[in-house]
Image 1 (cartoon, helix red, strand yellow):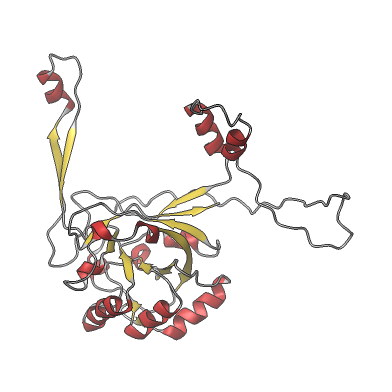
Image 2: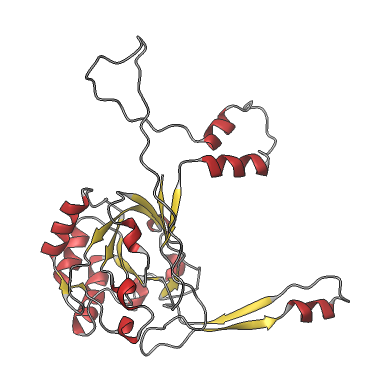
Length: 295
């Protein structure tokens, strides 16, 4: 079995005690939540504005490490055993040149190894470009990058049976349990538990639950730019999945497929989702390094 990404631990939320100009707050007052300036922000703000010298890299690294931030990797590994969508080409991955071969070309001074990939643009954890849904859709090299760094929430749908349709009622109930609203111009990640239950067995390619057209329309009405799921397709296998893709084109939203590690996000609240695609000219999709960032 392929190793799952390490999600790390979840730090408890921090509270800062607010005080007025006159001193302490009145007894019984609710403490005001304040975002403490990051170490990197303090580092930069303490410098003389006239000082144009670059901030030392070591200082930036220390400031970043000390900042209150946690990154959860939601992406599958890409290599020759990464499952491809049924009917699409396999991922081919190998060594083009070894370090030893490269050193031989440079009289033993130094050697740079090179690897190669051949794969479809829907391999591994990836985002579908609107071009995937129709000839006039936006290709991946023109897809707005502002849609790739957005607020997000994760919904727990692990109780939905394999191969079943996820309905608007399921989504509404999951949002209530989540305790956070659907973010406008954001994303909703659907944790069905499918990856955790089946990957990398053959059932991973066939037995997923997924949204139906009505649920896709519901997500679009909430104002999301896309949604993501922990399976190879957004809808259950068959015609429902075809119609969901068609609905995405008509609704001007898209989706992210083959996410993993979504269980780690359940109950953790909102996060920043980052998933930047390759700039493949005319591409119908692209692998992404999907992460959730908690600050």
